[in-house]
Length: 118
Image (cartoon, rainbow, N blue to C red):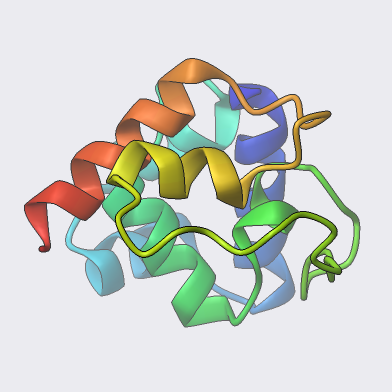
């Protein structure tokens, strides 16, 4: 998955006519780290993924390679609503299609991020 993420980040940078150094300065990183992201050598932190999505106005679905549409998938709710006493874990499971290839590491990262900001 790291390769597709790196490819998408590189495409976003190039399509917006930015250098790796410019991206690094904008997001508080280094040019070397941006290069490693784009080469798929290192995992991109969740806060940097959010930064890319917000800055370039694309969905995380697009960055993760789940769709070729930069605005992402549009889902219709086909399951019952989430109960009001649901936990963060229940919410994360609810957000992913049961057929989704999203892995446990991604779900755990989302749970941690939500717990930190609640």
